[in-house]
Image (cartoon, rainbow, N blue to C red):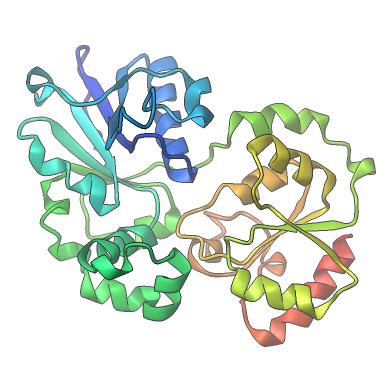
Length: 313
């Protein structure tokens, strides 16, 4: 079974305006490939655009994709031959009831953010809470029980569903039809710069992202002061690439709500990648590195991780 396209079909992919992260990037890449590879009439559909703050809804990081966009879907395009695709967070799911005829698809770019976004939305006092704070306090299983996707009236408005992770396919298995569109893509800058990697010039550096599982990474850093750790912090993309290009190891003990992109970028830059086993990292289909390079974020594994880091330097 597949989603039927007609010669005159238009596909609109919803994305918050002027916002950059792994999720919006894959949304832009989808539209880029729909247009350039499948020759489909596709558009970014930017919402929450503030013209008083920004000259354009396109974030500078995504200008290179050069894809067309709309700020609304006209009444004439609310037609059953067309398709609207929204990511799984509640802010975009709330777009679905606005349109009556257009075919609708929900793309689960993660498992966890479906629940986290709902928790923030229905608990206004937690709106500014970080993913880590909510995750550590409530645990995914508790949120999944509270916000059972099977009872979600917004999800029921969709005609089809997409998952970008093997974990997501298993988790949301009761949604039908459910298609697997794995996130194999990586930012073009990483691909272009990968040819400049010189393994012989690599330095004895371990890179980490302080936004990803720092509660455990800090314990590793404190355990062995002989290892040089460099955080990916307050860096532009070019600086991230430069840092990874000279490093030998990248570690990530984040929650992996989806397959995550920085580990793939690090591998492209010639780094050995070490991860935890939370979320999608537990699945080889999503994070395709040998299990000997994956450690549960437990106290007893800190010496093993440091030993592994040193062995790779």
